[in-house]
Image (cartoon, rainbow, N blue to C red; front, side, top):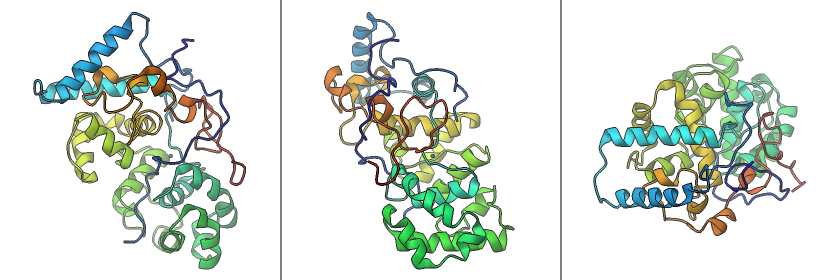
Length: 323
């Protein structure tokens, strides 16, 4: 195995900071890989001689991003698809970072993930699902009891209202089963398009693009679109990629945003797709300094799931209170 730090080594035990890792749930009232058998390989240049090529390519991509020569739509599509292929090699184990055992648990966990981290949700849901394992159980819950259970996720009163409402709707309108259609899911309290796509893609196998904070900022950073509205971003990206790629593309982009391409200080010098990025140089370009910015398994820290998939190369997250 190469000594390049970018792809997962996962030897550390410390918890990574929780900032910049909000999950994909909807805003309160106002997440696996087909390549599971692959081991994580170095994500940097594939040979020593590639260093100069990477630097040149990254500089060229950055220059293009500054408007040296406008990129055609076809060229952008080809670059976007190459980025997806590269990310598939870097994160063959990409997966939803919410613990769940069935569609109902994934739906509830995704609603809870608004304005908090997947880690905090995963640390909270074991007790919640032990108390209310089915929609019928949850619909009959005492609000104050549920509020206390989900308090660590924040906005617990608004989230309790949403969970009680969606559980009752599933019980009364869908025979106690989480519906598998987008139009039905978004009719549930607290469930918007992002949450619906998470559930459809990961519990029902229906392809969907999940435009959360990470996904939106990365596709804009990569110049796939300049749209800010999540629905418009979803439509643009859906036109670039075949439907069969939508769910896994979402996981790969979110994984990259949480581990390397951070919002405030991206680790450009440790990024495996730097030659394809028109925004290269916005973050730390020194490889050694960039290495220190890597999170989760990329930086040797535990992941966000207490029960990660078998192919995940990092360590499980600690239980609540064991950090």
